Image 1: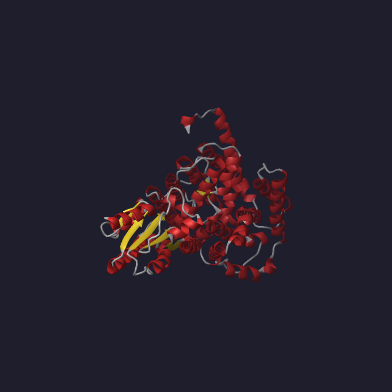
Image 2: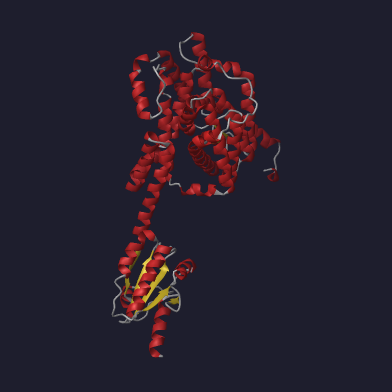
Length: 541
């Protein structure tokens, strides 16, 4: 960054971008924390400590870290199972896992997640976030705790429909209305902060009977706590380990997807391994200060880029501004209505759904639609990590099926090819030998297509003396495919047929050699004419 030159102009641009992102992150961090089942101050700790370290150490120049809506369900479930101490331990453990993943260079494998999985996953999270805000949006009073699973949640909320708080509904509606109006009329204004501020004033002036941060949580502290190690025991570490794995997996996916989005907006390329290490350190330190999970956030990162952020300085300043807000304006946070923060998250959830992409995938193909919907419904009704795993597995099966169908294998007749004009100048096919049969394989030859090719190659005519297998259009061959060729070779040896392989590239030859398909058992030639010339030379000798 400094090698390119960093002067006062860039510092000013980064400072303005950092301030803009901080204004957006202030209400959002508290809203996400509350939705995650923890106090709002923990969301601010996460954005301040974690956000600073993500920018300082990360592999993307414009990535903004902090609490993310995608983590709401996992964080809430982990906290409910293990308490706040267990949640902090799981967050720290996930941080260590992310650091290890970065050093092992696992970040590069994010590219193997199919696009329908990411779209379905994001849409599923959005539905869960919206469902989690229904209680505060309508000011409902539940006789017991709010269930976690979405079906049970909806049933419980429906049974309490008669407890709707009109003041809460009015506050949430006003918040959403102001955000949408400002987005249309004044898109560069901090709509979320203005909406929350206006709702807070209305509730305070009119003494509307709706919960606020002050009435439910007693406000937020003015400053950061001292760093403290989460209580540790081997039994507790084992208990939270599955949750830590889920948090680490989701954090890696979310942060790297956000970095990819940033790359598209800036034209730069992020360093995935460095980004994972930064996310890991940020999560570890966030837990030390009592914060929740940190990840790169797409909305705040995009805001940073649009506001003119050019370097990690904007992300670090965003955290500094949040700390200043906390130090100077903490008492005012007590007046923020929870229904207003629920309205903010409702808008966030709506924006998370990539609606054009979702509909396009539904129309594109049956396979993509199945992967999309399977991921979406598993995320909504089961669990986030399961949704990713099932979506990737279905995507892999779909890819294997498509690749298996793309391969072709069949007999070539030289004279027929000449008459049809199918031979090219570079590799002409000359002559027709009744004792020679030529087969061509075209496409990726791997375990998925092995059965198709094997069925054809198994029909080698016993009366032919020479068998030529053209592999010039096979870019890749795995061990299963090489084993199929070796089986064909054994049959050819048994019935006295000469086996010639032509056009095999280096990778294909290596795979064949490893399965003992090599000279003198077979002849290797560069083209079909060269193989035919070898056969004619042997006859005339």
